Length: 128
Figure 1 (tube, rainbow, N blue to C red):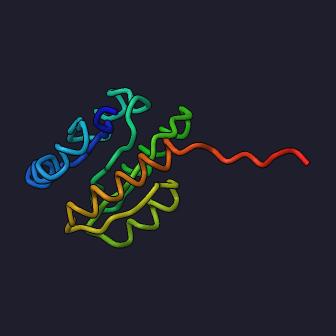
Figure 2 (figure 1 turned 45 degrees about the vertical axis):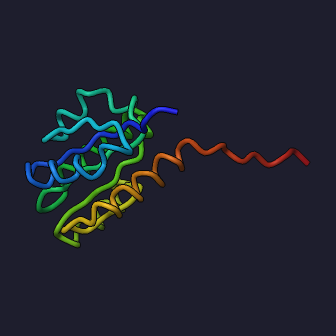
């Protein structure tokens, strides 16, 4: 099995480089600086999307809603320094919210859980 494919969207270059360094052995990473670039990158072809959220979270919320409108079910993980963005993550039906500053091991763990949740077989109840 190949590396799990993820998109990381992070405006801060230092944070982006740090995440790439920590995750590169476990994931095939497409690193981008904007959600607009992520939308152009065929997000439906990736296993998960990590989005570093700006101050109020409205761009990330719009991004997630755009994915939903296109019926793209790739799990999205939001991350922000502002804890109030967690409510935007809930509104967007994000897979998870991670507070900044980031613990890269936690990012790797949550990305792995998101990818595994999508790849898990669906349980079907037998007909009575």
